[in-house]
Length: 516
Image (tube, rainbow, N blue to C red; front, side, top):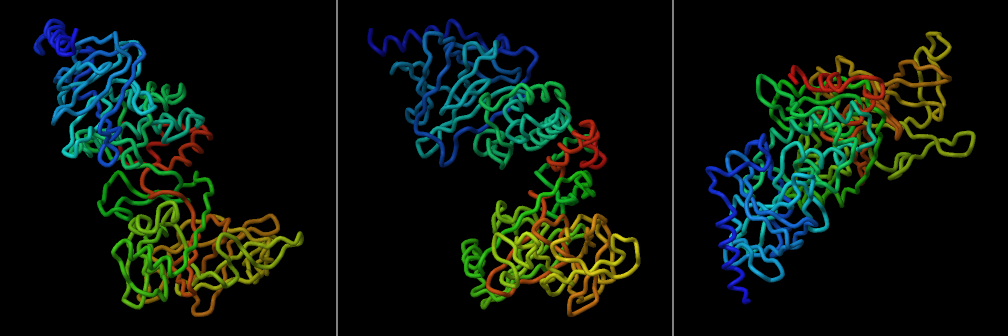
């Protein structure tokens, strides 16, 4: 029997088996078209010219109607199908035999046992639901996973918050991920699907990324979303706040009433540091169409009310470039500048890249270097750090050895320096605390050039101080936290859950005035 005859018979089978759309029964009777989501698996530069898909139980061809996914032609004799283009049409072949000459934009290939949890495989990973395809003008095929929305979340949660996290934290993440995805539906409409699989949307690994703990968190919060004034919110989240979350406008520009910065007393310490030479920084800026020439200085020129950097100025032989808000991390690299909660300094004044120097402690190891900033200049404390009202309870000023000092998180403090025009102070200064001889007391230090309240930062610091400047050929960033700072910090959600808080309490902590 030749291929043409087999193809002709297959068309007859389709006509006999596939009912008219008006009377077709939905695959999942209680799901409408709006209960599904399209996830782009391979598109753009990653779209293949052809691909192979696999199902242990065989396949069934379906199509999307307003009422949901509808049953079509069963193909139980085949475990593998090849998807490729024929002109501008997406075709399906089995063992070289043409099965469908046009899957169409509403067509979908599912595993035959999809009702019993069957999965379909593509490019080494397995997925619930089915796969649909879209032809591209460059003779490639966009591959899309079409599946129920709740099942999509099964493949997200472990990637965004590990399955070993406490149950209430996982439930909070489930609500947040559901809300965020609902809000972002259609963000890739131009590519033919709703969301992608990367951090641009949410990390999705399909069935291959499912675990019992994360699936339970999705099921136990099924359908729950966060809304504000009747509309689903953009439930942003990130890893670690460093002690304060941020207002949406402090990071991106739009002011959203439900994304207000709050004090985060549950944030675990997350210190980081990164350095870059002025020459490398100049090249990085030039690669982003920001050519300032040979750099002479880098300056934190403005902070927001919670102490996060609002503007970073880079001055060079060809002028000054101002990086603002999240643009700083976008240009310099979010894995380098992990948050906008940072100080800067020049390498060389007692500090080396990737480590600390200073006076040695009794065991011979170097103690942390602490820098003192008055908002205009940065000084190496060089061991001379003083505490007012030290651990003995007196009011005297006590000199502390550098190797006995640790810097702890403190609330932003409003000072005259914050409102003094031209003072060089940040929009939001932070006070610092020093721990010595077993007690924690407020510490202050003065650096030459002014009497403004100073701040101290070490590699193990939990607070970041006022604005500062680097002018020594290399800039050192020392900061706290990880991420953009808006919405729910996942580390804090985990810590709250460990302390017995419920997922609703976690959500209400970080999203203002929302309804669940």
